[in-house]
Amino acid sequence: MQPELPDDRPRGLYFLVDLVNTLQGDPEATAAGLQAVVDLHGGPPRRLAGASVPELREAVALLVAVLDLDDVNRAADAVNALLDRYPSRPRLVRLEGRPWAVHGQTPQDAGPVHWLLSTAALALALWLGERGRCAWGRCAAPGCDRYFVDAGRRSPQRFCSPRCGTRVRVTAHRRQYGR
Ligand SMILES: [Zn+2]
Image (cartoon, rainbow, N blue to C red; front, top):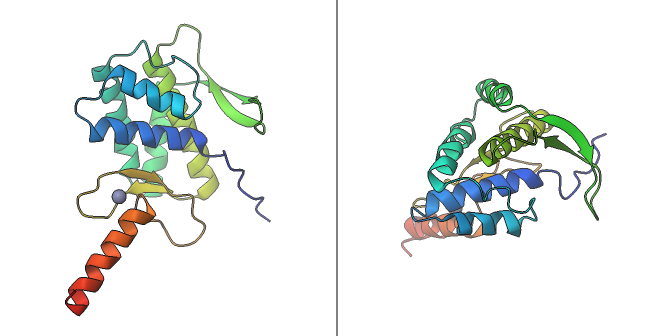
């Protein structure tokens, strides 16, 4: 029997997807804006502060290359390549008010980009291993390029949000029945 997925299990992934969406959706994104994403997710404070936006864009491009994959074997190879390049030491950590969870600990002298990519690689690896498929994707709604974490248990998720799903259904319905 599968234990219930604890609420915060893919927490790291939600943060990463949010970061990817913020950077991709805003060509003018600033370091302060990105730090706001970290803070919103209760991330370790000031972890990204030392990175420049172009550096972060480069890092995010590596993550997008994985999030764009829907073949699980290719995704596993890609995640393993990230784990090789950006290793971290996995530890069980218990943050206040949360259950024990695996966190990657990066060396003290690792820069923010290494921290980000090693965190991402570990989060993606755990998630892929648990779900056995690429449980993420890019929104299928026209004009929406947002990525999402697919935490559903049933059919694969297609949209980033219920809003995008509704928008597409309403459009299809109008097309079918002439408004
Ligand atoms: Zn969407």
